[in-house]
Image 1 (cartoon, rainbow, N blue to C red):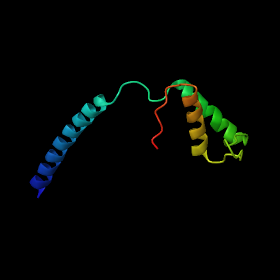
Image 2 (cartoon, rainbow, N blue to C red):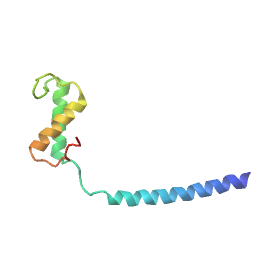
Image 3 (cartoon, rainbow, N blue to C red):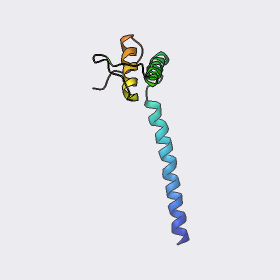
Image 4 (tube, helix red, strand yellow):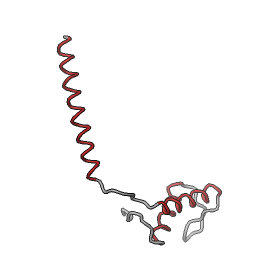
Length: 91
């Protein structure tokens, strides 16, 4: 029984080492640099602050924004309008 457990541990540790090296390889394939510019982050930060103060209004209707995700979306869209580095909308 003890030898089977030891064999399992050895095989699982060997698998872990190959996984970590594979993870390192996949991370190097990702594009280098930032996805969002620091100034785009500042825009989002400003909009979140306005939302928490209760001063952030939505575009057409002018209703108060209470959802943090909506505040982030507003900040990112304003950053896009200003030409900052922000990925394109998915939908």
